[in-house]
Image 1 (cartoon, helix red, strand yellow):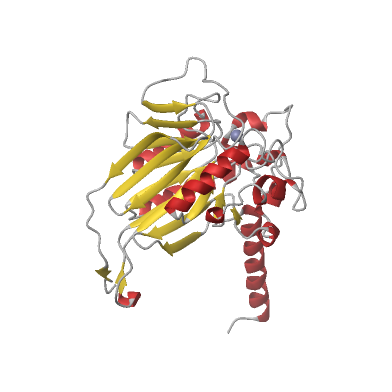
Image 2: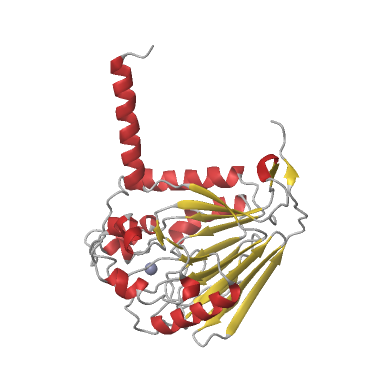
Amino acid sequence: MLSTFTMKFQSQIAVIALLLCFFLSCGQLVTKQAGGSLNFLVVGDWGRKGLYNQSQVAYQMGRIAEDLDVDFIISTGDNFYEDGLTGVADPSFLQSFSQIYTAKSLQKPWYAVLGNHDYRGDVLAQLDPVLKEIDNRWHCQRSFTLKYNLCTLPSVSANDIECPSAAELYFVDTTPFVDKYWEIPNEDTYDWRGVTPRDIYLRRQLQDLEKALKISKATWKIVIGHHTLRSVGEHGDTEELVQQMLPILEEFKVDLYINGHDHCLEHIKSLTSPIQFLTSGGGSKAWRGMKKDADMNGVEMYYDGQGFMVMKITQKNLHAIFYDIEGNIIHELEMSKNHTNLWAKKSSN
Ligand SMILES: [Zn+2]
């Protein structure tokens, strides 16, 4: 029998672990049934109270999402400009989010990561569950994973069968990787609560990602972060991520890396692996111009203006479509895999 002391000690450990998990926003895996296909929108770098054409992009998102019946919307970060939220009561949350993305078709879960501008405010505010009480669409965490089964719904009970085809989405907190934000003195102030000690935080994120990718049997593996890996936009490549994260994505054959940060739309293919780099950071202020002497290798599309991306995924096909502010299609990417995944009997072990 456990002594009272041991039990007390164990419960204290559990409470500490829970608290740690809360402050670190531990990655969680949520499995959902997509029923044969998965449709979602991706927008980034948007929160400007409707200005800089944010409202116009929101209108087009609403129109396209209605035709498509999207499952959710992804925000690639820099959710609130210039300096994130001042707290959970900051009216910017309503002025830049709830009162802008008002279309019925956009009343779906919004899965958001944090950008560097979000770290310049009260970073914990955007992660606070209180925001969900204000607008229940809002789901922002530092890092988390979503898994969607892609088999069509079975006609029999799903208890003893399983769907071997899935899309997995890994959301990564990229801001703490960037060295220049940590420099002292710094013209901007960053809220690093929950992220220090930095080296442990970064190592843990990479280890978690590697572990998840290693055991994944998903047909489609998609990693999402705020910062670029490859970009010819104003900020260019993020060297820290190219050094530390890209080798993991390549080793475990990730299909797509999706980001914001550069206020443009981009598709760049890797020259060394099948991974495709997609930028969707055109949610409001754009037209920043290209990076000087940018590496143009693999660039399939670069559009410097506002817009967003649509993603349609089935067991066999992945279709990404980029839209501009007028709702015109400016670029498409199609990928296919020769899978014939149907519901299968669960193995006995
Ligand atoms: Zn950014």
